[in-house]
Image (cartoon, rainbow, N blue to C red; front, side, top):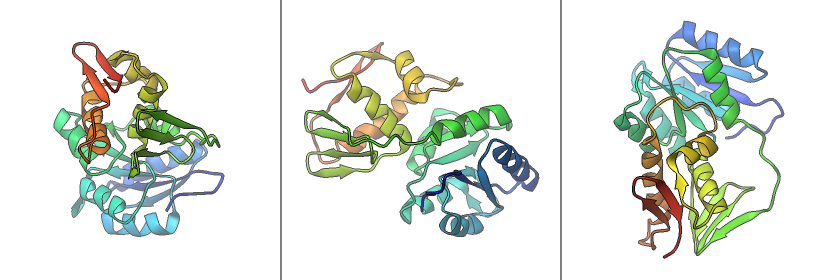
Length: 229
């Protein structure tokens, strides 16, 4: 369900028709191929037909929650990044975002520059590589963006992949929250640094799903370190 064409395709699922067309125009001016769906049912159908590289969903859709739509996309095997448009960014909102399978979010009111910066971050061209990172029994394939713990495959969202990649590139090195925000999120992050705790918690759940030994260790008051002791 992902775009393979040279011009990245972005699907906007937004009930507010004026906002949807404004965002679509901004995407096209920035060089993307944009499509619009005004409700969840049409959005699911367009995701299959349009094969977008990125999906943008308003959390508040007419007739259905944007969170439910994210879950539906993931349940049918969609692996492209999904971004939520949200009115607030409390910790409970971030948790709900991750639980639904979304990769990230951006806040209303809509600002074109901030929106396009986030889109560019997620649609950077993948670098063809066969390189793999390994630590203990954990493996991360940089080409396929897949991880494995021993023989058990692990599906990662793009943000989880970037976070794990950064940790595995600096094994046994204590990384501060500021370092992680700068190197993993990349853009000018607006919000509380405890967004990292939310992502680390979900990454741990996936990595330690079968009761495996904890590899991502918390260094209280500082940040995190990848180590096996």
